[in-house]
Image 1 (cartoon, rainbow, N blue to C red):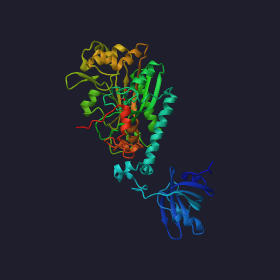
Image 2: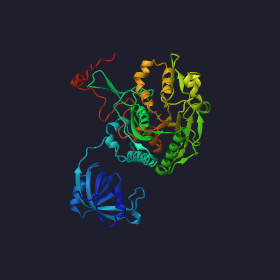
Image 3: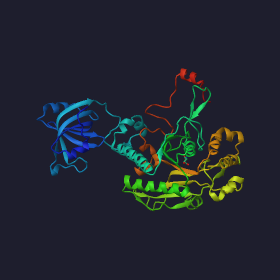
Image 4: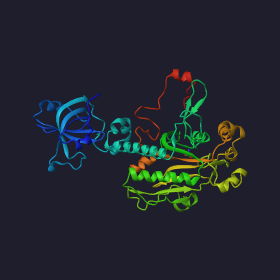
Length: 468
Ligand code: ASP
């Protein structure tokens, strides 16, 4: 085992003691007789001083450049009152270096780690994401994301939910976007699809008697370039049995309130319980189904949540047919169930869908589902699917429902968006994703997507046809 290393921030509790620190050279100031090193680790920055009476230390410190990786043994001294640096969390102490060991050198980084990388070209930041991740702002964002995930796990565990992983290579499921496909080598000409969401699996878990499921799930949608969308994104996905709309909404509302209180206590929630609005009222009064209800939009600490409900189930397609507005697996509102079953008043049928909105962003949506095969069948019939297509695409769901499916419902929340709003990073969810892709879906760090070997293509039985 290596010798106990002290985090920079813990030096505050070790005045008078000798410590071993490990980290990166944040800044080095050579004053001739003295050398100051601002040493950084994940916990913060502390000032280290190399004094003339430690010759070897000074000689080694002279070789240091920004971002060199070092181990420094030193004594923690309290600073005199006049020397206290109030800008630094460790500003009341200073480390007197007794030994400096270089663990690795570093090239000059393409941009500075000491500042806020927001002003740096974003493509450069993505290419050198490991450098960008060292900046204080990115470290705080990534830490907040961890804390959001942790709060979710604690909350759902406390409420009797099980965290269950559902498959990532699976079959195409319709959520209104294009699928990412994965060619099968063993079954030439056949494809897996990456999930647009775990929707079908979570419903099948309810048929399986799991009753309460959640997952922090990766979802994949091959959409046209959209400013602040990522081809892969993360959802808090949950589903529960024997519930009505109110139960799911109450559970999620409490979670969001608790999360704000524990993770970002400086934020003020404008109205509790969250106001509710029908889709029709939202469109009439705000011209959008994602109304921003903040009273003072310049106040970074104002949080205005709301629920939007009573969405139309179907909308007209360009060719005069019908398609779903949100989720084909949703149930109609109880009072419109009859219309769904008899395929009447189709444009007036309301879905049980509920969306939750924060400061003008849709952060999640869900619904109570059709747990009876005939009702689900009706949805696809209204959308004009021939019986064979319904069977081929959703036969497994109908079959499952015929074996005693309980009433159930759930929701999915966008974790990237929630963390970005909590962090005050309104411009882009990329600021809270460790390794994001560009708006065009390129990974500039790994350089993906990329061409593959001819042999791999042969194995898959794939020939590339040049795009016209
Ligand atoms: N699967 C839905 C979505 O991804 C969410 C849900 O209805 O639970 O939007």
